[in-house]
Image 1: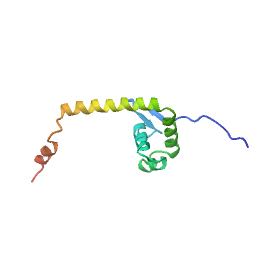
Image 2 (image 1 turned 90 degrees about the vertical axis):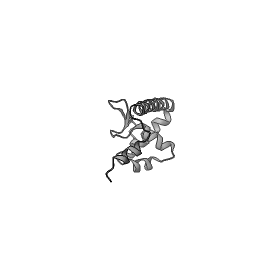
Image 3 (image 1 turned 60 degrees about the horizontal axis):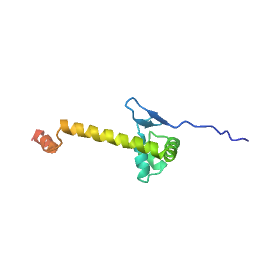
Length: 108
């Protein structure tokens, strides 16, 4: 018997907001890479995010290991976007004293 060798597609897709998602789910590439960096195995990642397929997680980890520079640059860009958005939100909505303001609204 001959083993059919064929190229598999990487289970990553760019959504309308420019975020890379895994295997047709809402789980981001950022999430899988972060879990992998924290020492999680592919099985543990699937356990944490049951919408993921085990084979897809292995494929994404493989893609990450083969394209560390590109994925790293993408992750830095995403972190910069998150920091910018956080700063914009904090400038519009002062985070200081939020708990106190919420507690003050609470009926006694």
